[in-house]
Length: 169
Image (cartoon, rainbow, N blue to C red; front, side, top):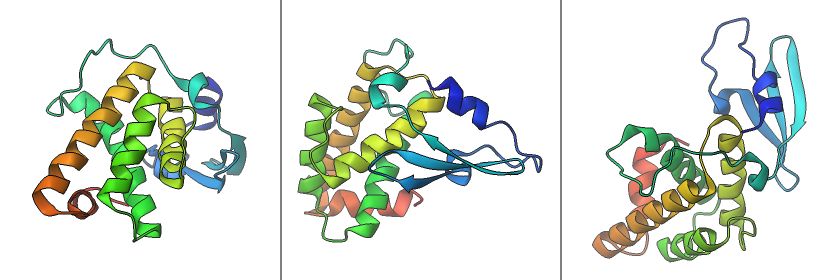
């Protein structure tokens, strides 16, 4: 977790819900620089590296998609995929699968734009939530299983078509 970022995300005067998507906007994705909406204005902030924001986690050895504790983590990964797909409509399930396989092995060095987008969104999410590196990798593998299942059932964009309808972007 990033306690510096948490301090910057103090409640707004209008008592609006403290959702990250309403409060944090990317200025420079390459550098991980964001603008944070605060009471009285905005402030720029440099996100910490992924390695710096991993927490102790919940002690989970597996991810059960029926367990609601895991939904925010899984949705963060899927939201990043949907946003990237919106900007890159030629993306296929196969490319998503390759990216997720790479991230499941090495989160620190994403090898493509989709991987960088997922890691960036995880950096923000993990800055305010306590998940371990192992739990994040398990979540990535769980999303990968979903990609493979939907691709098998519905073709080369089966997964992307499915999540675009269920994950807000």
